Amino acid sequence: MQLLDGKATSEKIKVEIAEQVKLIQAAGGRVPHLAAILVGNDGASETYVNNKVLDCRQVGFESTLIRLPTEVSEEELLKRIDHLNRDKNIDGFIVQVPLPKHIDEARITLAIDPLKDVDGFSPASVGRMCLGMPTFVSATPHGIMELLRRYEVDTEGKHCVVVGRSNIVGTPMSILMSRNSKPGNATVTLVHSRTPNMAEICRTADILIVAIGKPNFVNESMVKEGAVVVDVGITRVTDTTRPSGFRLIGDVEFEAVKDKCSFITPVPGGVGPMTRAALLLNTLKAQSMSKEL
Ligand code: GUN
Image 1 (spheres, rainbow, N blue to C red):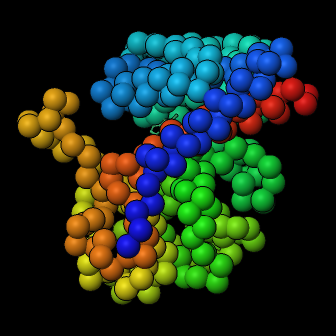
Image 2: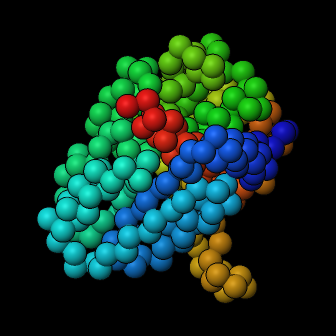
């Protein structure tokens, strides 16, 4: 078994990005600038957004965090998005989700300029990804593809089973893995909560990508000998022995499954850090695209 070490790989990517930033500065350019809008004070969202700001600092990007109260109106949020769309100093921005219930998430996503949509959530970005056109691929699928690429995981002609059909992970992963690309060129099966024989299908996977959000969902009997397992799950469970008060559990029973695998991602330290690195890659790309306009 070889660990797909997202922590080490993401650190390598961040060093590469920091080198790019130095080159931009040496050429007299402006460093990439990421903005994030955080509505309300959900604990997990706070952590995610703060980490994004720290990541920017680590690679030499500029960052702007816009905090808005839970009660902010949809119109006010749309106004802030419009400002960011027009701001020539901002290369890309994200609106952290989930948003409060009174805000229509689809309307917000549609308002983001696709050229600044570093989350890759907008219909324009998703459509371009489906058609294999240049675009921003959302951070988690982008990070997973980068991890598979850097470990030279052979995906061509393999059977890839994706567990979960979310807009952010399962659906884009199924498209990316079936595309004529490297990694890619796999035969893909997407399974979800209504799939009756899920365990049986998972057992046929050469590559198993699990993004269902149920801790320890995949057990040893669902994994084929020699499979590549990518665990996207990060469920927080209370753990009073930790300073944070919680720990993260993946969708895969790592200890029970690991010895059967050719490659496996740990949780934490697998997909999570790659997701963070991918947002930085997208922001760097946004800046180089804005220069071409
Ligand atoms: N909430 C959880 N993950 C993400 C993400 O990647 N982007 C945004 N905008 N919100 C999130």
